[in-house]
Structures are given as C-alpha cells and as structure tokens.
Image 1 (cartoon, rainbow, N blue to C red):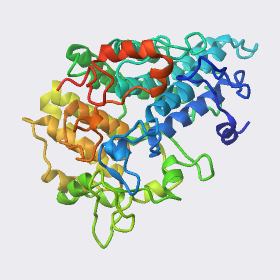
Image 2: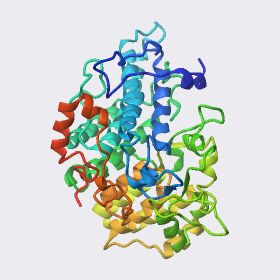
Image 3: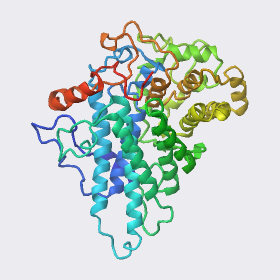
Image 4: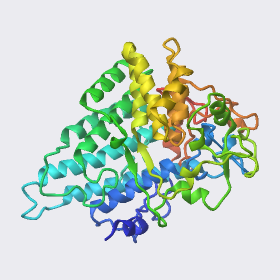
Length: 480
C-alpha cells in the first residue's frame, strides 16, 4: 500500500475521554493487524499536524505567544479555550492519534515471528524499531506534561486496560522519560542489517538509525533544559550527557514531516489559511521586529500599505488592513517541524549560560545566526543584527528568551515553553481576556472538560495535586 493512501485511510479510533457508556474504544474499520510501518507513518503525520496546525480547535499557541491575531472570532486570542473544547482535542490528537497508534505498533512488533531469512537480524532490528517508537512516545509525553502538568502516563497509553486512567506526577514522569530516552539510545544499532526499519513508514528519517540517535539525544537535551530551574543537578547531568553523546549540529539533522502537494497530505497551515482570511500579524511581534530591523520580518509577514502592521492582541481586525502571514504558510509543502537545529542551538546557548558561561556569548550568537539563516538570511545579516542585540551575561534569560521568542515564530508550542521557563519577553494579556486567565497570559492548559465528566475522580486528584486546574497554575518546572 502506498504511503499517501495509508495517510488517507488509516485511523485508530481510541477515545481518551469518553469511553464508558459507548463502545468507542475500538474502531471496527481500523487496521489493528496492519504493518507497524503504517501505524508509524500515521502517528508521525498526526504528531506533525498537531504541532503545526493553526486550527483554533487544536493549537492556539501562535496566538498565545502573540505572533498572530484573529480577524473576526477572537475568543482564542482572549484565552477562551473551553468554547471549542480545545483541550479535548489536544488529548485526542496526542493520546489517541499518536500514542495509541504507537502502542499498537509496539504490540505488533513484539508479536512478530520473523521468516527464516529475517531471523538472524531480527533481534537487533526489533530493538531498533521499538526504540524508534519509544522515542516518539517520549517526545509526545513531554509535550503533554508541558501542556497540562500531571497527566495519565503509566496507564495513559492502554485504554483497553485503563479506560479511566489515573494521572501521574509530572516531575516523576520527566525522570522516567529521561531513563527511557537513555535506554532507547542504547538499543539503537546503526549496524543492523537484513530487515528495513518500517519500510516506507518512517517519514522523519527514513529508517536512518544514526539520525534517530541524534534526534533522541536532542530530545534528552530538551528534557534536561526544561527542568533546569526545578531539578538543577539532574538537569545538568542530563544536558551534559546528551551533548557528549551527540545532538543536532546542523539543519541536516532536523526532524520534520515533509508534506505533499495533494490533499489531504499538505501542510495544515496551507489547509487552514489558503481558503480563509482568519489570521493577521500580531502587534506584539510585528512591532518588536520593526523596532529591531529584524531581517526575518519579510519571511514572517507581508507588508500592507508598504509597512508591516500588526493588530492589537485580542482585538478583531480587517484582513485587508493588517499584515498577513507570509508565503511559507500558504505553501502546501512547507515541512512540519518536530524539532530542528535552531531549537537545539538555543538549548545549547541556555546550557552554556547556566553551566559554561565562557562559551555562552558564542553559543548565543550561533543560535541567533542559525535562526536568521533558517529563514533565508545571511551570515552578514546576522552579524548586523547581533551588533545591536548582543548577549547580556547579567540578564542572560532576557537575551536568550527574547531571541528564542522571535526564532520560534513557527513553533508556537516550543516558544510557549521557552517563555514560561525564561520569563522573557514580557507578554501582557489583553484587557479583553476572559476572567479565568486572571489577567495573565496562560501558563498551562486546563484539563479536558470530558475528563471532568467521565474521569472525574482522577481529574479531581490531579487538579488538587498541581494546585488547581487553572490557566494560571504553574507547572513544576516553571519556578520563577
């Protein structure tokens, strides 16, 4: 079966949140006995779609980070995420479409009986395949923890056995994710022969084990940096070992999903923007880039009346009167970023700022330069820009935080985590924001409404454990 057909037809209909009164934990049309490569392909596309979509029912973090502004319906710009049950969809996207498909792929691999010709190489290839799946699960669980705090983990990816899963402590999950990624790297073997890794199913790295090792180490770096303020010793040891093992060193290492021209396999940005005029530039970032003569601004936004103009956050605005999102968002084949070298470069700059201060200025310059070049700028452009935006050793969180915010323009979820950890730039909630936000930019998403309705006792316990199911409740690693 060709991959584009697999993407079109394969869905695993497991429900995380509404599964007690109706038999919707299984989909009679789903291919539970399909090849694991099909499930990998589907999971990767679903993960990329969630990370990259601007659909207000799923991913509003470009709005939260004040990169974009809505034109007419401004609920999400004002942090009303319950009207569209956004958290429900985040759970479904990640627990159902990603994690449970990956879990099914693991089951198939563990039950697979190799042919005579496959038998000799199968133990090594089996380890490779299971490690690749687990790396994607680690990535997804970190993202869920970073969104909600305590989440279903031990029981989270087995809805048949645990239709009403308990929630695990977020800090404990992080520690386990670090152990898992270490085990995954140890199990990956570049010398495996005789059995392809998921055939065509792996759309991230096409079964290139050396690339998966680099990706895994880069995830480990991300895990360590995120807990730097809450668990500094574990963070430093995790980061140090990840760097020593080999993280991304150039855009050639990027983890991304390469979309296609044809429906339904084009980038979700194109899907949501090409036929509707729902989004314009947000004033916060447009003004900042104008003021700093940022060379990336023309790659982020279009001009209107010869200038770059963004609308006030939280306010509606005419599509005709404000800058639009630039052409990358209207291109069906724009790759979907999972984790790229620019992001890693900023983690390395932050690691040096915390633990290797002599190297921090150069690492900071490299991160900014990498971002500018990612968006088509030159080394000379970066040099000019850095002359007026030098590294500040006294307030390095401001230096790195502000520049990471600009650099992560098309990675809203990642940007949100940088901002919460570093507390820069200073973002102000619009005065029109809903009262539940407490006059602040949200620092977490509230749990799905369906969890309150169906999994109430576990939801209550989790809410109490984190200090309240609120948009203003800080996660365990968000210490300042």
